[in-house]
Length: 247
Length: 253
Ligand code: FES
Image (cartoon, rainbow over all chains, first blue to last red; front, side):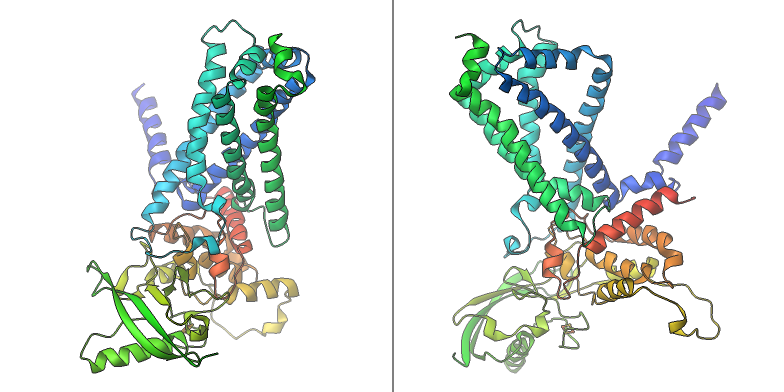
């Protein structure tokens, strides 16, 4: 027992002692390694966004929310998906925490700021404000979870998910909150998507432009795709909300 | 076009590393537009010496854009507003009559101010000492042309080698990261047969030295690339990242 414990201790010491740490683990502590974590979790979250968008677009079927409800039930009923859900939460938390740590560490790298700095002449606003857009998105994420995810999973909400969504988005301030958040998501993705490929070393003279282009296209699709739902519901275009709420 | 302009200089003055430092204003009447920026600074210093005052300390050497010594943050841009130019190649004709020009030193934790506009760039040296070399046994010199090198690779290595190590990348990066410098130094060696054998150990060692010096991490804003006087591409950073990840995974230690 004691031997097993000391063995475990040694393993721990090896993993967490920077001096002796094996190179492959040590890489996550370096400035490139931390970006690697951002890139991997970021791309993982991009895949999730695609899946989430696919779900949201079910509302366009104008079938009283049937397809959308079936989709959300499928997402909660399946054990495998429940497991992936944990990985997803972990991914979001790691992405946010690592991002916060990176921002703080990078500030320390320039303790005295410039009196005059014209950064807009050498880089995009999107690239310089990932910390800001990321923080806003995190706040939005918490609000979003509370409203839909927790209310249905743990709060015992009785109405269907489609009805919850339609009710929420026929409220002006709530719909606008979402639309603004989705614009910010677009800003975040516009830099983040291509940045991930650069960090992973999957870029070169030839591909740099391709990734940038792909990033902007991806950001636009996500922004327009997600924001279109609250717009449609609020203005009741195609009778989307009245169809669900049965008015 | 008028031959002379009047400008005001707002210059960062700092006695030594521990001094707090402050801006000081200097009037510069009748500056010839044909002067280089550093010549204008010489005129100012000449005047300060005559007045019995302390001249402004700034780094310079070749004054032809190849040594990488000059390092001024002019009006919010590293080496001033021109693309692909060092401070020594910047001329006064690019400034307006009556303009106030703000001049600051490179700002980074890893580049402490020595005096006024001169900063200590030993951190770059440390990165180079860590891995920016090729180990060779002595013996007869080998015929350089005996080693076949693909033209594209030779060109790419040459582009990387045009880095003069001035530190504009660090100065203009919002995170004060030295990734552009370091990746250029890695590319100039890794792409050639002589540097290939140590390709992976090199990146591991240089990465460690980079972080130890207090440089920030690269968030791919691309500011370095657009301010670099030698217009070195961030494609080198992608290559560095690729090599670094490979090295970390395949390392046997
Ligand atoms: S003084 Fe040598 S590059 Fe400017």
